[in-house]
Length: 374
Image (cartoon, rainbow, N blue to C red; front, side, top):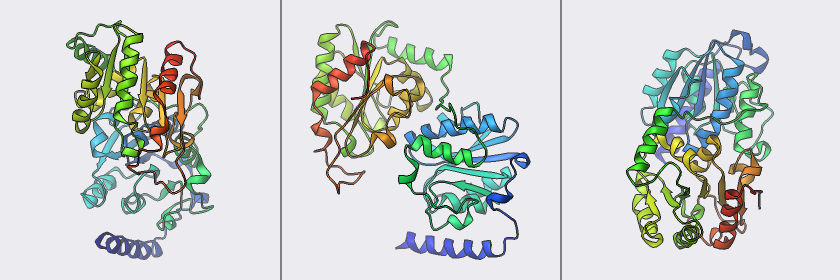
């Protein structure tokens, strides 16, 4: 109730401010030649922001001399603020936390243009407007705050935009960027690789060791393949590939869950959940020969750094949130849920329909360079 009241008050305030705003902020008035400073907003989950990097790269190519400012969830700032395409980055703390402090930071940047690649509403569009930015582009443009956008019409929904990667590029295209050939990019430095190699060496893992990654956690249990299936898969792979190591990735909060799975796997398993700082996660994932994962941020990290994945999907659709390109390098297995199962459901019955044998086949096809989507 309190949040709805806050949103309603914000809506009324912005309606009033917009009524007295004499600037022409329409798409017809937008002049790319006048753009000097651009705000790029991607304030949701890790995978969402990884997908946004393709659009950020496309915008940098279109505006090589502009100042590009990223606006990212504070937890992910250590990774995305390292992007060489960006000149600065401002944290978003979620919801209305530090709302006015963030707006003050955005106002100091004096941006001419805001591209909301993927942002939470009702905060994203109002924050960009209150930061004084005249031209704001966003897709989908179905929010009640679309009257603040330079592109309030035609109204496009998520269903109209396809893959999340494509949706972000459509936003960049509104500002004149060329989306052709755009790829996701994450910074991986030589120092990152050396530090990851040192971490692995401390576990007795040599540079030539075959590493197979398992991302066992996800944002909801409905996106998580059951733990016993991961353990059975890993034991079989360890038998087939003597000397390989099974690396369990994840956040610090998933470490105990990963350790329980590792105990069922045996000595081939190594738990690195919570052991690798976020800025070095791309280097670790790049070191893997293949990653088995549900619909998670780590999946998109893998695609961005060129690591093949076996993606396991049920309550989400790989055509929207699976690998964005290079599909011949990846394997996706999709067991759609019955209608009515929500995307954040904790019901594992759908993803449990994926059998160990078919995931094993997918891993082997990648290891033998024969991967094609299933």
